[in-house]
Length: 192
Length: 239
Image 1 (cartoon, rainbow over the protein chains, first blue to last red):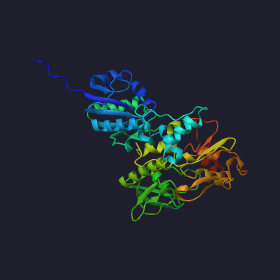
Image 2 (cartoon, each protein chain N blue to C red):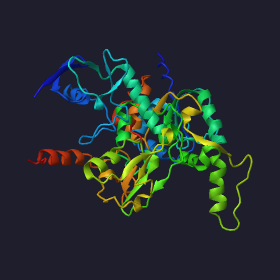
Image 3 (cartoon, helix red, strand yellow):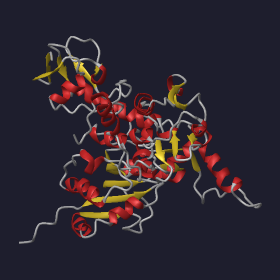
């Protein structure tokens, strides 16, 4: 008698857009839970778990850290939505635009890309200041930094700067058995 | 002392005549959320979080500034009210520049707490990123308009408790903002006694001590009630 094939593992991705990677560091703070997680999921795309450069097809769950601030972020966010079952806004930058979104305060938010580049590369530079220009290499900034849900539909929100490892575990665990976490109370919801 | 009796969420409560609906809901342990309200200060119902449904009334009523009346039938947590409260908090976040992660009031902010209370996991309204100044002209304190929700606690505590009346609301509509003195830099307002009561009662990080950095603000919101009781009833909290 041959043993039945193991149940297909869930395909998990973690994505890093415009954020500081603190949410990913918090994910790594899951410590030994990562072993439990590895038994139940295949990590198919992650800056801390794989060396895959192209976002794969048929992803079950994606944790998306960071706001949408440049054209690369935007392209990847659209791919994530198209190829993923459940998209999670992972941390305050994805949920609110948070600190990356502060540049929206420049130029009354109309074209904060131009304003922030001029501030950083010209106004604060020495005599040789120049604006970066490398089409196709350095992704262009979007005029406005956006939270993820203003770009693609989001299925679950995990606020926090960063969300604690405990909060991440409490959110992920029910998802592994096909259930939704209860997003209530200070342990799961608090910004900051 | 005459008493009025009313019903809150199906529960009969009796409160002294003249008590507010908010006091009645508290007698019923209904946990109606409040943000602008503070014990010891005159209610102004500016935050709209304490809106409740009163049967027979065509509109929602702010519990903090509505008197409890005989025979009222009050509902505090209907689906409609819960939805409105969550929308209200989302609008607070969307219309100002509230970045919890880098705020002096992080972990001690009533707006941040209120987001948890109403179950806000994100804002459905786009963030407005308004252009607002910071007044750092006072030697001890700073006013960051980006974080102000116009609850007017500072206005009221300065007027009613300290008696200095440094603060007011200037302008109209979306341009409303807190002004010091005759719309002067705070540091130039001679009426300010630098008592710090406005800073102590501010629910967010809009008013803070200059020595406080991220997550270091420690508010003291019990002060107005303590001082008012002491003055009017000659009674201190330890007596």
